[in-house]
Image 1 (cartoon, one colour):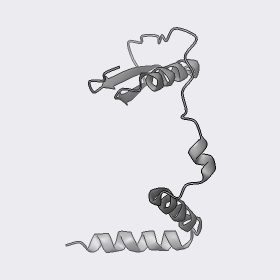
Image 2 (cartoon, one colour):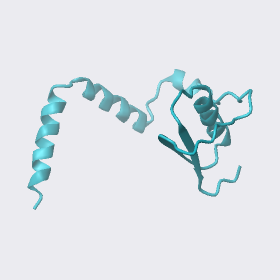
Image 3 (tube, one colour):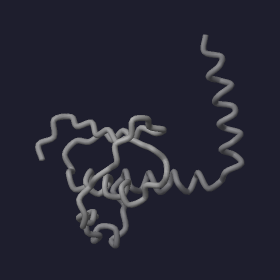
Length: 106
């Protein structure tokens, strides 16, 4: 049956009772759902990522330690910013980047 769900819910209820900040988060979520957002957030401009200043290039390794998979659909500027950030912060780890695009139009 479904007895395991009751055990999971019991553990969750115990955890939730020891974290009163969750109620505040619930209230904030409900305010957003109901449309009761603050005037300041309504005036906020949409966030646009910076345009990379260098070509985006990654070294090719025969053996990699990490595969980074980025699923994208449209929003090319964000994909470009993500790749630029990976390039800027790469360390000694050998990694590959796999971009999966679901028929974007841009």
